[in-house]
Image 1 (cartoon, rainbow, N blue to C red):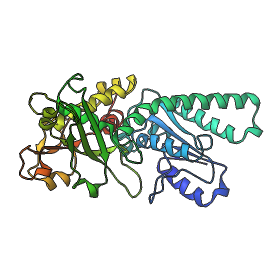
Image 2: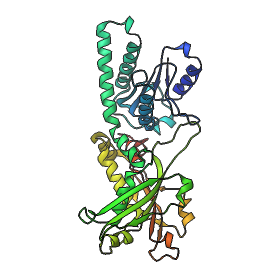
Image 3: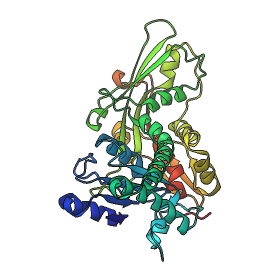
Image 4: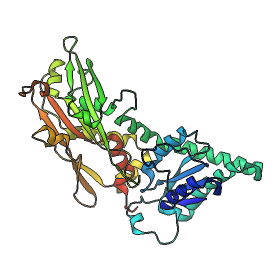
Length: 380
């Protein structure tokens, strides 16, 4: 049995309670939703998840589904495939609803070609489940198709995996590698000048963010060990739909660059902004993207224009700010700015002195802008 888009959600809901009605299910431009805190893709029958590379409605879920299906017992019974150059609408035929075209990413291939590519993935799954009724040649073709799809999917997901781990590494004591890079960006120094710098980040829950205070320690002259704190925040949906999987913002607590540079015996320089870290995040995302995705975005995508930070006058104003601020300039450009908070080295509360807090654009969210948000509803 197969379902497309919302039809796939309805199908898996039914089959989960009636597993005897199907030997397996096929989700096209759909996925197994994470509901009520359940992040497992264990399912009573095998499940194929096939999502187009240009599926503007579902692509964000593919990396998550790939990980959860692997954890569910391997990608043999629960394969997750990315279909080259196909989008969400191209599973269907006839008139496509406007809400789909407005969110989809334009495809360079015809509907007929897209149908063929989806069909190859479906056929290989069916053959694998029922090898006893197919010839050796048919089985061989199915296995080769699955091998090609697996290789393509794994390669496609590398940028998503890389960027996702920059938000939090998932360790027992979680850390964000992007926070470490962010502190270096604020310091505005070269590698030689930062040779004696070490940065350690701690990802903390929101309820601990207010009390977390960055620090700097020096065990020797012109050395600095900086501790930072961060809290990635994610969009939520009761139905687990229509939300990006990347952090909507990283609440970031850095040590003020003036203080760290002094510990490193470096002279004062004009201060950087959170904006500078966000620009670096977007540049990194562009470098992680495939050549095809990068060229597509640069050709038709909505460009981000990074504006100066809006500095909050008090701590709660930053801590409870709504995150990054986007505003449409025109059809081709969107402005983005951060809320920040700065306390001077001589701030009257010593434990809160010398801080630089930022609302940050995650490299993962920047990557999803390049692959999804920035190219949705565009034309080639």
